[in-house]
Amino acid sequence: MIAKLHLIAIASVLSLTTFAANAAEPTVRQKLVNCGVPHYPKAWVDDEVQGTVRLAVLVGADGSVKDAKVVESSGRRMLDKASLRAGATCKAASKDRDSVAGWTTLQYKWVVD
Image (cartoon, rainbow, N blue to C red):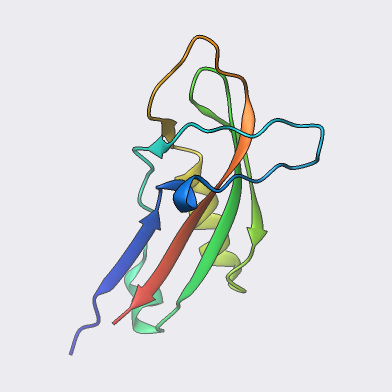
């Protein structure tokens, strides 16, 4: 039986939960949308590589991702890196002229069933 990948990109930004890289940096209330879906090679499916990766994402005032870092690793470097690449492609749902850059969270859940 061929395993199917169910990659759940919780791009709803964990119910708009925010994460500040440090207390001096603002958080954003913008909802991230249009996040890329990480590539999941067949070899990973065959090996049943699974995990959850939580990222801190710096969203610029223009709605684009300026930086991303792993704040909760899956324990698998390959999944962490693939999540970072996909997270870097996100865009904010709306651009407000009063928006400021700030940090938010994004989670990718890798599941084989």
